[in-house]
Each structure stands twice: as structure tokens, then as C-alpha cells.
View 1: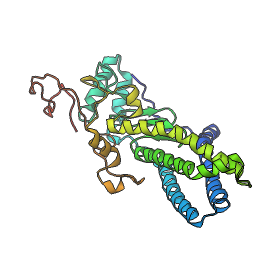
View 2 (view 1 turned 135 degrees about the vertical axis):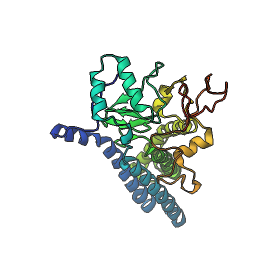
View 3 (view 1 turned 90 degrees about the vertical axis):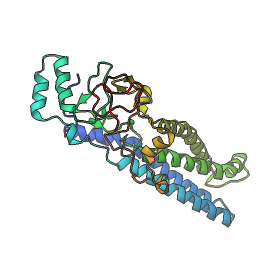
Length: 326
């Protein structure tokens, strides 16, 4: 049974501030590359190299549209607060004292079960149906403890150093849009600089922008190759309604491990992340999702139960032998 230390209360001090500052280095690295790419594309390519006025205007318009929405998505991914576990899942002091004084795992399990009997919790730690407990509360479905953030995170996907934030319930849509628009940004730069890259490479063009345009093309292609696999993988996870953590370890229900336990069909899975308003699907703004940050619709395998019809997937709400649907 995991310890009940309160991970949300972080220690403060010089060392803590130093560690927090170091965590921003990957973000600073990305921002530096973005600023340089802006200078290389807008100044060195469009202003000083491209001679056709129509081509220059089209390049600048297309570039700035992609740049703006790409940076918007990146900002949202970084600075959106990760979801905090609702207070209803936090155990009161009296229950915590009972838990600490329990003499066996079975006694701890019974205390947790009594506390969580009215909570919408279906996930378990293992096949023995132990509730997931950490940070002095029962973990909601799909929540995981992040060792970097020092707290439990709702619908956690992973901790990303490039955004210095957990990718989770509140910013997963922004993260996917960030990957998608970053990919489009790199492809746009690669395709529009290709002819000038070839001219500089062959020596047909000379000038101060030679280094910037050659290097810009290489960097754009390199990042595009890296992003395409990551973006496609997360699109796959969205359609399967899985997080990265759930892809590596299937969530466990009372019926057992089921990698598709939260899958509701591709369209509903997509809506759970991007919302039901098509006009806002591709904008980095928060949209309503199916369920909420701690309660999710569940699709589980049917179990035989005396109180339910045999083979009926949708069990009676009062059934204590099967997982409930929310």
C-alpha cells in the first residue's frame, strides 16, 4: 500500500528554486530556436532573399498564421494548470489515522473501501481489487502521481520536459494541437525554403542569409521527422481513448485489466478530448469533454451476476459485483 504523504505540499528553499529554474532549460531551448527561426524566415528569407513581391506576401501571411496558432497552443500547454484531485477524494484526518494504525493490508483495504464506497472509482491497483491510494486520497480513475510535479495529476498522460508541465486532462488537447501545428510549421518552412536551399547549396545564390537558410531547412526537416511519429502516435491514443501510461500498462478494473476499458468508439473518444463543438476542435481553447476530470464513461466486459442479466453489458447501478458506468 502506498504511503499517504502529502505530495502537494512542496518544500520551499534555495535548492527547490534552483531545481525549478533548471526545469525551464528545455523550454528556453525551444523558445530560442523558435525566435531564431522567426528571424531566419522573416528577415533573412522573405525580406532579404525573396525578390518576388507576391511570393513574399504569401509566404509572410502563411507563416504568421501558423506561427501565431503554434505559439498559442505551446503557451496553453505550458501554462494551463494541471487538474487537482477534487476534495471528495481526500481522506479526512480521522480516516488517515485509522489507515496508519491498521495492522495489515487487508485492514487498510477495508478502510479505503468504506471511504470510497460512494466515490466514482473503478480503477484498481491489481487483480486483488485494491483501491489506488496516494497523497492522502483515493486516486480518481486515470489519475497518476507525478514524481516531478510532486502530486497526483488527473488523467495524466506523461510529464513533458519540453513544456515543463504534465500533459494531462486540462491540457491534453493543447498538447496535441501543439504537436500538429509544430509539424505544419516545420513542413511549411521546409517546403517554402527548399528552392532557396538548393540555390544556396549549389552556389547559385550568395549572401549573408546563406547560413541561416541552409540551417533553417535542416532544422525544419529534423524537427518535422521527429514530430510526425509523435503526433501520429498521440492521434492513435486519442482514437483509442488511452493515455501514454495506459498504453504501457492497461488500466485494471474489477473485471481485470482492459486496455480498451475507457474506449467509447472513435468519434466519442475524439470528442472526449476535443469536445462536441466542431468550431473549436482545432483552436487551443478548453472545450467541454465527455465526463469530467475525475469521472469517465467506462466500457467493461460483462460479468455474470445474480442481480444482473447474464451477458448484459449495462449492469444495474446497485450491483456491487461489477464496475459501474458513469
